[in-house]
Length: 375
Image (cartoon, rainbow, N blue to C red; front, side, top):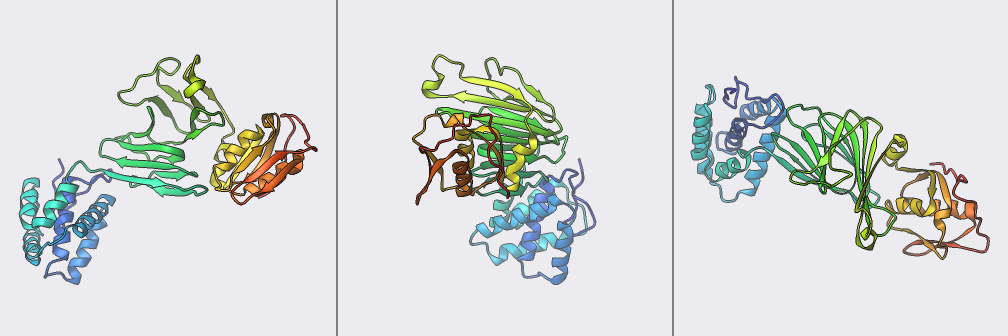
């Protein structure tokens, strides 16, 4: 085990993976106490900055202890003074773990007790990230993983010392996973999970255009991932075994609910190889359709707008195909293009855009290319 050192200086208390160890957490608590004590100086501030610069783990530990200090009320100046004295005495000599815990626990009183109870547990950062309708967001997790959230998405991230976990509650996310062989990266979606080490893949959990069903898509762009049942879950055929994806693969699960599930298989699974650039067009605020039923294209466009498109009066809109590139969030431009192509009647209401079949409806069929709309 690595020997922890004094916070001010001559030793290292660094974790190679950037994980906050109990020793680093304890040293951070001492720094907080010293900086808020009566003996604070500019030299002490510089030493603290140098300590934080040793690694990402040192910086994170200091930030977490600072947050804890701000949440703890009625910590007296005497507590700080005592802690500062302990920290100063130990500045130039190694601190065995046992002494760190004993000294900090006594010296920091209310503050340090609360701080150490928080930070000396198995270190875990648990955060929630979300987007509203039409909003895109990119987040860099503390391990360096980049996650890009599409419209109406909500995820929870928990980065522990043994495993990195992200739970997708709804929406669509692109993961660019930082490599860390010691900590698998697991994305949980309902009763399934996607396991990766260092790779790029997307997960989409959205309702389909069919009432009563939901869809989960896992698309691998780079590297390798395995899709399996979540811990404690078991599946029946056709998804009983883990599935290994290769770059370009998309694994699709469709789950029927309500009346749609009666007399049919509740979960279906299929593998295909779509045009990845089209799937990722949302990162450019675009939607790309290639001979897609108009009703499905409308569902996709409505994901990005609070001014939805509503198809009125014609029961066979699925017979009308649409192809082209459209700007997400601009439903009126999409509706105008479709109206011009098929002779539909457009009504721009206060709360929606209506497309209705008129006397001039052009039944071109699903194989006829639709408009291409420039950005």
